[in-house]
Length: 445
Image (tube, rainbow, N blue to C red; front, top):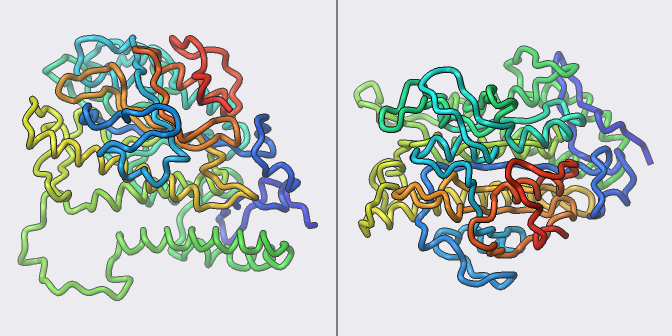
């Protein structure tokens, strides 16, 4: 069988396109799930997906524990993925139990520490975030140590209600306590950053599609590969082409032959014409593509910043902004809308999980070789309650994690235990993290 180096790329005029993991890159036996993680031969990934403003508390947690749990209303979008997802309840960050409504809890979601109160630029998260601890180990094997994505740009100024700079609410990834990592919110730039890499450095973008530039190299490689690898390569290139076309159609709708039947010069455009669902899914596609190509093994994504005012009126039955609706004051109409917004977020999580599960990797798939966290910085948006955080964990981390469970911990166990569990499951040799007291044993395979 032809052997390929794991860092083999397709090259064209000034560009390099990373390849997915192929059988020719390692012995077939190493594709099987194993309780021993070897990052050289078995990529294991982690991602943390954060959504702001909490959930409707009474329709989140399953009443059953173990494997036989039934998805409550807000978790219905992942019901068909139950075997791949665990609900982990009764966790919190004790260090965030302060009087602040959002910023202390959200900025510390992946650090488990208390941020320093400031109205200026002297930020201090109190610690390095879990994803960046992972990036120190997993980032040795990929062009990008980590990838930070989001949907809302960084905001500045001071929230006069609580006396904190709003910058805290725009970051969950902290390389150092005083150094948050900027997130990319433009899907085109995120795409270009991944695929326009030559010798490890981004290069200028050509107007020609990526696949046109690497077509000759791809054909030469395909002729040398076995049947399974040829199919795998074709599927991967199809996914790259599809994603690039979707981006192009958003940037230039007329390129698809579409013509408007309305003269928009005579119409007032909406305040925010962006399709929020499509934008969100494009960003999630970036994570899937980066994991598939092994460009990075660590990613974070923010559906929105703290106190996000994203308008969800595009959902049937919802009228208004997320933050305003989260302050429901027990109003039945607002609670119903709050539930629909949380359900929408879970549906986007399900979208990513389905995408990762559809990507084969030897005898397994990318989701099975990942640990994908999803959650918020507090439970109920009206009370800003940091107890019993809404948290889901998907994937088996290459055989190191169990899935399909509802694990009801004793009240107020550290969320840092879950973060430590993810670190150890993905091969990061840490014995503790923040205020952790140990891994969550029922999750460990």
